[in-house]
Length: 97
Image (cartoon, rainbow, N blue to C red; front, side, top):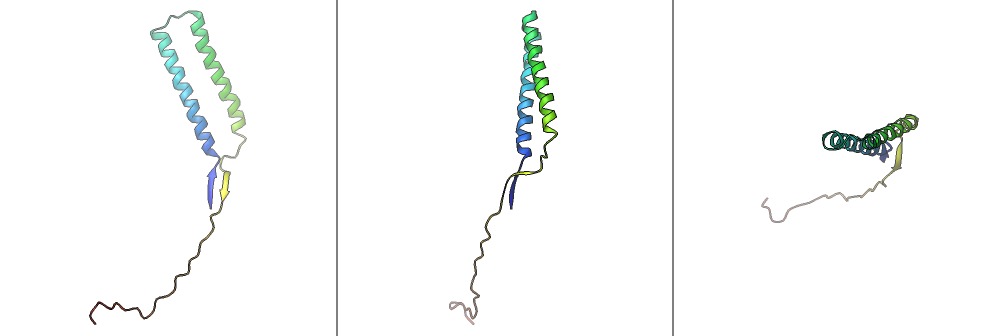
């Protein structure tokens, strides 16, 4: 039986969240290193952080309700039985006795 578990989607989701946090760190690094610290740029960066935190919190509230070990797809492969006839009185003609 082949089962594809549901937690594959959770791994993909966590990878996307990780990419968003890397982008956020990259954004703050460039903001403080090269950018001007005007209130618009700081506000935009913290707004992105706030939206990301709100998405994480609300998705966590829904994620904890799910049983991640249940399968998405579960199917059985058909069993193939091949009957091989028994070989009796088998001799090799070219071998000396």
